[in-house]
Length: 371
Ligand code: UD1
Ligand code: BG6
Image (cartoon, rainbow, N blue to C red; front, side, top):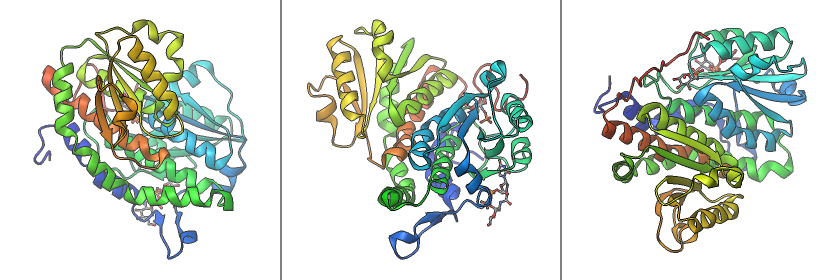
């Protein structure tokens, strides 16, 4: 079942152009005129009015699924105008945090069986919120117990570390934002750009997968390290968290995703000539702020690896002293889908080089069904 691949994680990383195509199949409508471009999510169409009228949208999940929701949050806020908040399922349960009848709660889970997410769903149902599921598993507990939802249709994922489900979850939540957001004249150009971007996304993912050898070389350089930091912000704060999660869970290397805006409030103390730091600085509205982060890290002799938009290397690394990973440019809200792929490849190659089990990392389970 692994075909030409040695590991399921490797196969699942490389099949993302196809899994994303399946996720979007039949859901993107492209008529003749730009006005006819829209999104159809069969499972949500009778609930869109309720979601639009809700006081809050609350994303709830664990691990990679939480990170996917975090990546989609800014675009959902932009298009819906509804406040979007984030909850890690266990933390919501620990706090017994407030959930109201006027809330839309969105449960994100690849397996649809994660115990904490399922218990949080029970809690939200008891509190009278509208409960929406986003899951990869038809017939799973979350799919059955939510009021409505969307199957991500990414295909079966076997590697314990989630890869293709992550990118499909982001795409589904981006489509959710397009479906929930009112089709106003002011948002029309933006909506069309994102829908066009979704159509083209599998091609861009195919392009970024060509960086495989480059990431293998980078993994060789980093194989002996004890720690690796990742700095991101805006749409790509989630990329930093998810990239670091991949590295720690499979390569068993300490890694931390850091919100770049928080750099001066602690993380800067760690910077020296030895600790490798990946900075995500692809082109979006946060770009100039990331340029300044790079300058400040550089001034402290940080060992920088910068992920930037193709052609931007001279803008992010004027002295030529840092290593650069150049990725194709896509619409800002879709950039996390492209940007995570080099980090998935890096985590994969680090794991193989360090001699650890790629598909079944030490102490971890694909689906955590106990608390
Ligand atoms: C559905 C069919 C698909 C068919 C398509 C044709 C299923 C599973 N899907 O896809 O095979 O090609 O119509 O129009 O039969 N749901 C939840 N919670 C969740 C996920 C889903 O309640 O977490 C519900 C949805 O609200 C919906 C149903 O499950 O009622 C199916 O969801 P989904 O597969 O996403 O719907 P379609 O894309 O319309
Ligand atoms: C486990 C998996 O920890 O559960 C992760 O190893 C996953 O890959 C997390 O992100 C949440 O799982 P799910 O199925 O709810 O998305």
